Image (tube, rainbow, N blue to C red; front, side):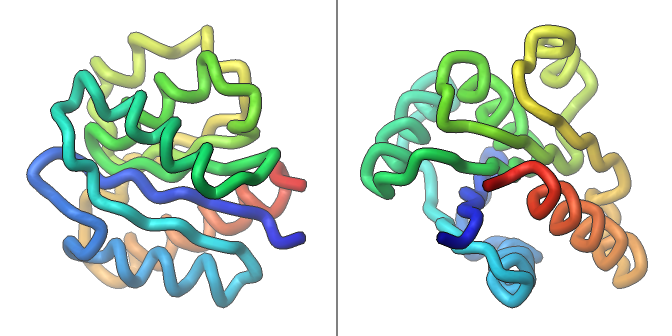
Length: 138
């Protein structure tokens, strides 16, 4: 079975925003099954909505990649969901990250330069994320 990665966009964005389609395509080409969806609830309900997506996919292990506030949602989900095995956050605020730091029970990669949409920064963030998931997902 291929490693599964679920993408979590930030606020005021969607699964089709910016470089999210490129992330999904590159993860898939690297051998991952990828789920991308658009949150339809408030940030407070996003953690629960992410759980519903994971339930619907029906897998035993997931990686979560979150951008901006989507990173905070991914981190929060990892605290109580044993199916989450690895997290990558791109451009998630220090405040959101620090709320979960020290309590995240899974391998967590923080990518700061992913907010820079230049090709070299995006390429480096993609390579690091793919490598992280391939090392930490069954």
